[in-house]
Length: 130
Image (cartoon, rainbow, N blue to C red; front, top):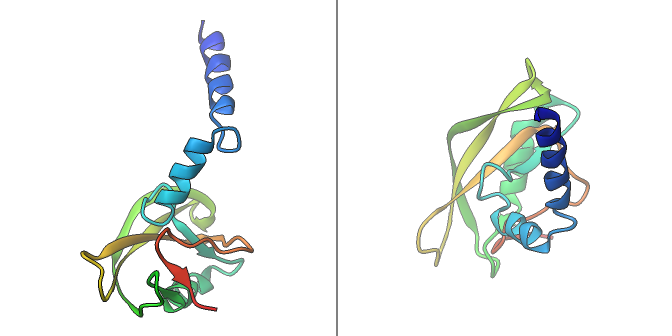
């Protein structure tokens, strides 16, 4: 019985994959950076570069109309497993981001352990400067 449950679970996970589920893909894109389950990944092969990569990313981020942002690191949270971290794990960094016209600050989550993708993603409603 456990074997059947396991096989059915695998089938359901495969069927719900983001490439086959546009609604799930859209939700992930909408939550990117704002949700600890979908952090902004800015790491590299050198673990020491992670904090600088976060700063570089934030320094090149602006509001939807090019507004200058301000940001403050407000701590770490959300332990996760990664072979790129220390002793097989890492913590996400949380930043409070604000810009003129924003009703309330937003919180962005960063993973500085895993290598960043070639094409950096940007949280919805924000832009990266050229």
